[in-house]
Image 1 (cartoon, rainbow, N blue to C red):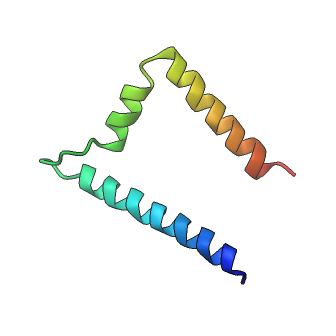
Image 2 (cartoon, rainbow, N blue to C red; image 1 turned 90 degrees about the vertical axis):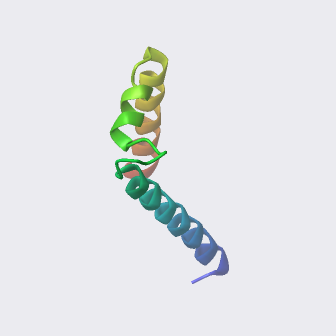
Length: 67
């Protein structure tokens, strides 16, 4: 495995661990952090945000799931 692959894999795992920690912190009742469902609800209120979310999902699907 090359050094660059190890670096990128490490960055990915650190980000994933951070997201899991934030998710767990948001599940406590007296937490300063919002739950994931609350964040999604607040983002999806505006039409522009909904279009941005759909565009990001389309981009991810196009780049990672197409041949």
